[in-house]
Length: 206
Image 1 (tube, helix red, strand yellow):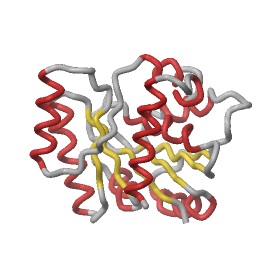
Image 2 (cartoon, rainbow, N blue to C red):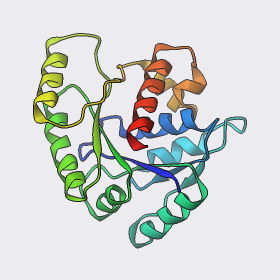
Image 3 (cartoon, rainbow, N blue to C red):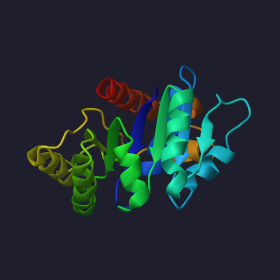
Image 4 (cartoon, helix red, strand yellow):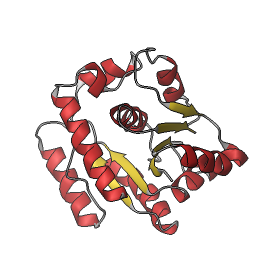
């Protein structure tokens, strides 16, 4: 059965979809990977449609609603890893995606609204008895706000991943081509950050 990682955050604009796409692309050369897009914006669907023919294959589904549970079971049977891009709000689909996860990944940008919004997602994960981890995304190299947010997250008692992802243009450039940054620029700092995040996630997910 597959490891299921649900990328969830009730606030939009945190880089949730970009992280899901990049994690899938980094895993694709060595694992059977499925992407499940249940975000109504369908940005991940558009990214997948742009993938070049020569890129490693990724299974893809955008089934949601009452069929979501059965679809997730089907994907789990046929793959090693399933990555879910969930809606940017707490609704039935988000709850089901979190309930079915082995690990809930909550991306947070270094801003108070992101931290506040993450609380709702983390509470839902706790209510569903699912392990969750916060990933700092689009992080500046330095600054008082960065340090303040990190201190706030540590004080909250939530699991904060050691690996962080910087605010790097390589992610947007790769996404626009249907690629992950590890495919478009494998030796870049952005790719190294993404691989470190993925390694930490897989260790947590077992």
